[in-house]
Image (cartoon, rainbow, N blue to C red; front, side, top):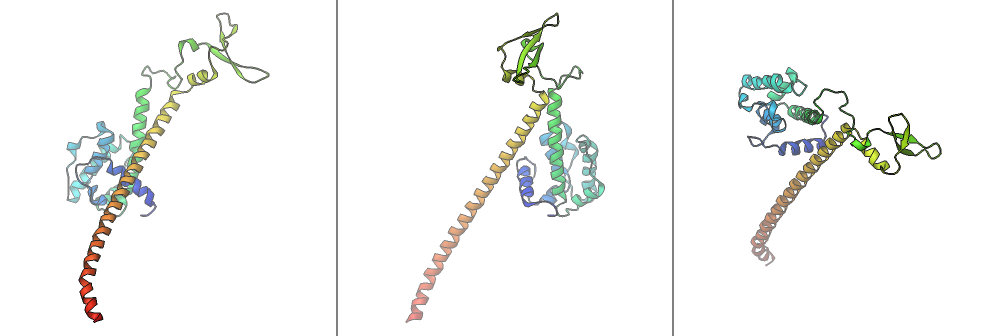
Length: 245
């Protein structure tokens, strides 16, 4: 496996299993060799980056290389990476663990691209440089924070037109003030963390289902062997009795 751990492989295989592909997966290194399923993986997460009709299933080396060359030029560049010719050759020739290493890297690039797209979508489009400043309620505008010299606790105050400071009192709690001052970028990062955790939960649930399926298969196998053992014992009983006589 090289430097890929068993847990990492399980996680990768579970991730691939969640993606609807046009061909059943039998042997990962051969399934992805022609690049078609790679295009489908990117299409699943980033629909605008891939036109699937450009990629045809291939058996000969030249057509496989053509698909990968197209992926490099048309798709991977938009994800801000390219793969070297020797890496492509290893994948096309179905070398052990080549496609696993590539898919792990591709997954990180896709996650990053999706995250950046979500951040860009929620940014203001007016070209201002204050995109990361929090949105503050109109009644909160003009508020400043003054720390008491004795208690070092903040108080909400407002400057009037003359520059004098007026204490607002208890109309705004400390919690409300802090909530209004949270940058939007932090909220987006927390949302991304939540998405990653939800994906991890889905992967773990898929592992549980797979293990339950394996346990069921083993139970069926045990029952089958038990039936054969009972039949064998019945067949041997007459012979054993004859031997004793």
